[in-house]
Length: 348
Image: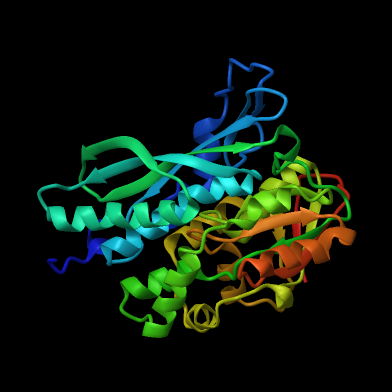
């Protein structure tokens, strides 16, 4: 197969190429969902991970889509990462996927067909691991390579986990370590070690399968997955939807060691700065905090971990569920009652 650097074709990679929170809010402002059937359990109200439509008393359909430009140069790895990231939204809603459709955009004059086939094979590999078929899709000829999935899942209506269901006193548990965006920025600069790349691939291709079992736990009140807006951005969505504030302990955050080293050296994605510009006024950092800590809080995660809000008495069960499926979760903070003004995150 020809040696092609996929990242040379993309201006941004993975979830780092998401539109910034501030710009997205401006785009979506004053564009309400005008048709609201009662069966639509989750729509656009609180920027949740997927739409959910109830079919009957026992079943609801989850529908989502996610696609992006290359975050790595290896085509099969790119396909695997994009597919795992796309399916994550289904698990974050508490469901399990049942099939997917491929979203494919490729510069046919620049990429050999063998490379494109490898990208699609990587996506298929993840779907096989998830136990679902890729049942169709759509493809176009574009300037930048784009790949992802439309994911269709199923969930019991009682187990749907919105980002707006958190309660005062809930503990916050994160399923994967932070720093994927920083690793990807280092990769493009030729500064990422072989060990760092291997860890990046292992984390981004690990499917968030605990979501369905977590949703069935009575004490789990809200879930989301941490992706392009970073931990702070997606936690703020939980806070706003649930009308609560959050307190994080930075020392408890699970961090990729090489990402910390790189962040201290000034490596970060452009998306990290855009994220802070969009919501930094709602995040209170300690006076002694450093810029590298801010970068990790706002670092865009591609195929990041599940963020769970649960009752304190349920925390051990949540941690055990993650660990049973090979994750290394961390208890990172808690949610507190609303104070006057907009939702905020306080970091200690």
